[in-house]
Picture (cartoon, one colour):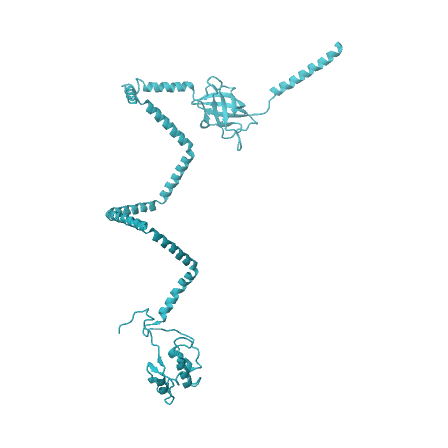
Amino acid sequence: MKHGTKPILGKVVAALVVVGLVAAAFVWWPRGDKVTVTGDFARAVGLFPGSDVRVLGVHVGKVTAVEPRGEIVRVTFEVDEDVKIPAEAKAAVVAPSLVSDRYVQLLPAYTSGPVMHDGAKIPRERTAVPVELDRISQTLDDLMVALGPEGANKEGALTRVLDTSARNLKGNGQNLHDMNRGLSQAVQTFAEGRGDLFSTVKNLETFTGMLATNDEQVRRLNTDLSKVSDQLDGERDDLQNALKNLAVALNEISSFVKDNRTVLTKDVEQLTGLTTAVAAKRDALAQTLDNAPVALSNLQLAYNPSSGTLDTRTNIQGLDDPALLLCSLLTGPTGTGNSNPNLCTLLQGLIPKGGIPIIGGLLNLPGLSALPSAFTVPQVAAAVAPKAPAKETVDVTIRGADATLGGLLPKEKP
């Protein structure tokens, strides 16, 4: 067993040596090129060669050199080539605490766009450094010296201010507390309603822009309002009296409505029925309103003021029967209340159908031109045929012209 164990142990040792060599080669073998970048800082307190360079707190490189250059400090650092840095990246010296080492933070993290190449430079405008504690102490010391006996309080001015303030604020502690509390609540309210506040400011900006755009119209409006106010001022007595009378009238109307509410209610109900009926006949009313102006115009054009008649053009029927035509002209059409059948029969006996021309022959009948405006049947028989005996007497009155159109127009004085 002892002789067999030695070869196995030798193999294990050889394997461990090989693994160690591979690990050492992996650690010390260069893993790629570096991107060298320089940045100009106002100060570089606590920053040394070997300090970390980070992106979002992750180590991506290290500082290789820190060199003072007059009013600036130039810091050179290397970043792994596989880490993309934006071409316009910024650099800031970060102090995690007061005593820890500081590192360079590159920001923002790369998302897209051009990248920073080897030899790039970050100017001072894109670098930042933390405020040092000694500078804060120095600033406070400078403030105390400025307010001390060699400064603002050289003649006791600051002392008097503090003394006067103490006397004025004596007994107002609760008021100061309430004021600070109210101010805090107001600030909180503004913070909660900042969206509405910003919208209001934006709308006010839009409104003022509209006013500026329409400056001429706004000025004209102001001028017109000024004139109206001057006119109202000049007539304020009349306006006062009008308002006074209006108050009296409204009081009377109120009393009238109160005393006659039953009658008014009934009238309103009837008016509702009337308006309902009118609404139901709105098509007929619309047609009437369309045709009425034309009808009135035709009536006005047809009226003959010299004879008091309505002159019309008609298609006369019955020209083949002169006796019937003459009868209808004298007494009215047959079949109406104004017609005279006896006269029509007499005329048909005297004037055979188609025997005498309606024009010329009728007017040349002996004695027809001498007929009066009011005559009897015997007179007609004597004038036309003197030998024809009259069987009965019928009073016939020829219709005269009505100059008043049935009483619509006033009668003319003789």
